[in-house]
Length: 220
Image (cartoon, one colour):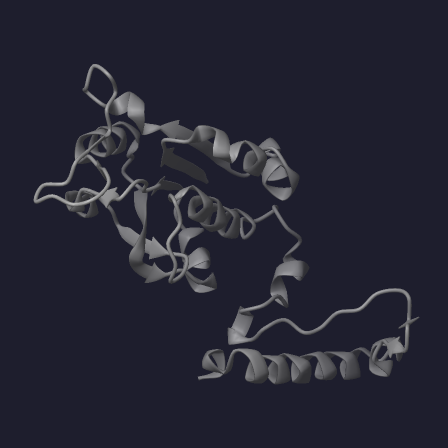
């Protein structure tokens, strides 16, 4: 898979691409991630990418031309384009799984007061990571990319992915490790029994209980 991220702030991605699981996935050539400053696609002599909004208002608005030029340069026949915007569809695990089906994604990071609304005509998906406003789309781009990359075959052990939160619309079961006792708090006895059937039943019940208490909407 290839992911191209269009941004004005390339340095924000340095740690994201050079640490932990994402770095290993890149090194193993399971994914290619390109951070592209779309300022270079501006036709303005000073590489201007934003301007004041028609009709007046505060702030600066991203222009369509640099984004259009970047997409036309990068887009392939099987490319899908994601626009990160607060009024997009709220992102979830099922969307992450769906995005792994595509060989090439372009992710557009918004910034400033907003973007020329005509940019929407260039994209396949509009995505929001929640009902709050950030200074730009860089952090959402990292979150979306991370959630997709970790699902690519070979990036993470399949057994680890099987039982995690949001699979089958349930939160993950609680886990424990050594010490067995700590300041009066003990590991549930069933986990020490060695009876794998009982352990599986316990974990399933804990998933249902936890989801019912914390995210009843998932059960619905």
